[in-house]
Length: 249
Image (cartoon, rainbow, N blue to C red):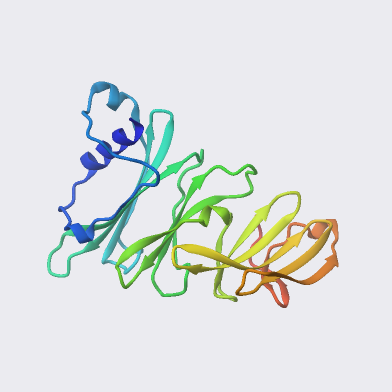
């Protein structure tokens, strides 16, 4: 029932030209849609919490547009992402992607449009989940695919809190706060992030590298001062701290 209500909202919130079959992509995990009827009860149990739109910076600048709509449906929240491409000879937008993301985050979406894979096209992240520790900001990541002219959802992005594009290693790194801290390094492979190295700080600092077979190799293990437990590292070989992040966690 909740999904049916959400799909109805998507249908009635659309005000763009109808796309062709190969232009439309809907991703809904582990759900099935069926016909239903809008009633007063349906409307009363739904609410638009937040919206966001950009047509200047995302993807190919000026030729792509994104809309985020955060809905409450009964007692659960969903984020609808719509990604559009402008027709070359017509001033009309055609939808390329529609994603529906379930979200339990209490915070605002706080979208971040930036290049996360160094291809000179901007991608997007937004807060999508509530972490056990508030210092761990959990986001969904969508990467612009210039060949397909659409967004690819990175399916395990929420496993990499406080993610940043790392210019020095040309990768994405994450910073996890727990009893200590961990800096995790990963590269985008298809629709996933694949970890290749990490630095862990607790009673000791340990540095690991992961080979192409998935085997973890210990590179170093050092004693660490308590005041250095929450350091984030821009590089692991050689070990190098972020210097321009005052509050990286």
